[in-house]
Image 1 (tube, rainbow, N blue to C red):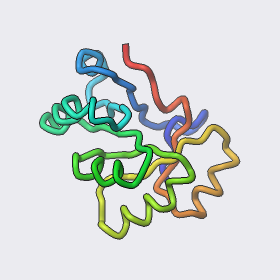
Image 2: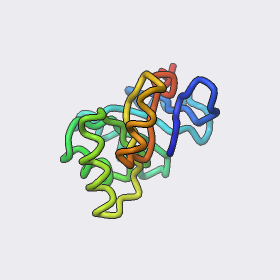
Image 3: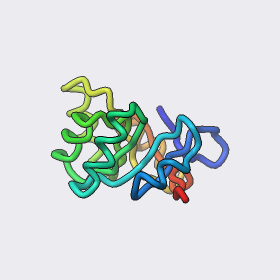
Image 4: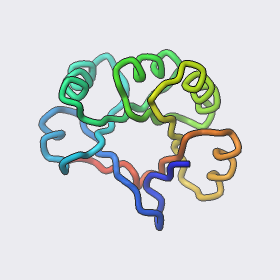
Length: 129
């Protein structure tokens, strides 16, 4: 199980970007994070074409399908969506990993029992400058 942004477990960080200029100011080999939106398709296409790892925050199953097809390495979502998203990802053999937004260590066990790929704490997403 992946634990992103946990207080004492070292992990990678995701860099929240809103435009390509911000992406240029992130550390090399960073994973860039942004909400899935049709407004962000140009940024997503650029990331995909340049083989830059990225994560998309999704709100529904359709966005999960789009994210996987667009090459997202990770998707982040609510706990409510995660179980269905994980089942679909496994059924269709997605390379995309499913991460649930959490803010309390006590939720790790619950998410693990659901078989979700991992969790992401608020500290796991850093605003890019």
